[in-house]
Image (spheres, rainbow, N blue to C red):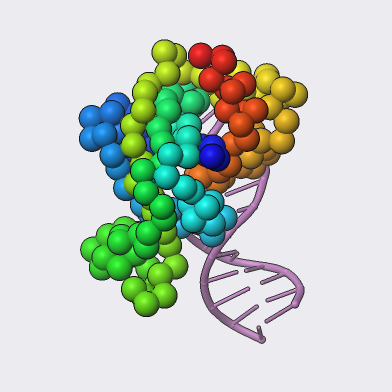
Length: 150
DNA sequence: GCCAACGTTGGC
DNA sequence: GCCAACGTTGGC
């Protein structure tokens, strides 16, 4: 079993929104590295839910992978912001997974705290300089360390 | 295949 | 709103 972190802007889709709907297709990812991570996901992998571009960036909840990767339908949708004219159903470029709500953390584990723990966390894409990935891997040790802060 | 221009991400 | 980082695009 692997672990991941996904970022979401709470104004767009918050942990409370995920709680409300229960399951959400994680679509619209348009970065090749993030896409490759999505394709590596397996059912029941653990997901840290992270709020970005907001007053208090940080980990706010736990989710899990509900489906293996499937072609992201928004890439074929002409009216979608995520439409990609270079993609086709025969050769889809972008993938999505379904994500299931597990729980909210008791408090926000802030980005600042994670930076302070850089030594304990080791190499972690989230706190690497210039990090822009919206989907990234988390090791079992990092998962444990982060949730222990809660 | 290089590289400048441009667009996007995301913290602050 | 600013700006650094960095991925993508397209001309050559």
